[in-house]
Amino acid sequence: MIDKKYKMKFTDATLQDSVAYTLVSRFNIEPSILRAEIEGSGGILILKMKGEDSKVNEAIDFFAEQGIETTELGDHILRDDVKCYDCGSCVSVCPTRSLYHDPVTFEVELKIQTCVACGACISACPTNAIKLTL
Image (cartoon, rainbow, N blue to C red):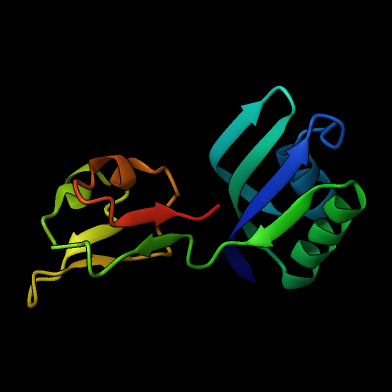
């Protein structure tokens, strides 16, 4: 069983049907849309897919055939340890509590598994030490 996050990049020409509907009805995958950025010419969709390994791979292949680029998200938040002084501004705005102060070291830590790539931490960081790579 896979429970991973993916980025889907599409254009207005490549996205004709609902991604979520297709994942559920055709591949029996449980999608959770974490973020969507849609412009006139296309956009990106960040979603978590939960389902059988083979079905997730089939879905990714299906969307590739439709012209939708799908990549697994891993380290989508990058922190510059030189610029970061662990002030906690990012911690206070993180809606999923993915950023937190380590109780022993008091350094800011990230639980990448729960991060939804919302970008709130980027805006809150006074030293611009955080980047979102989508």
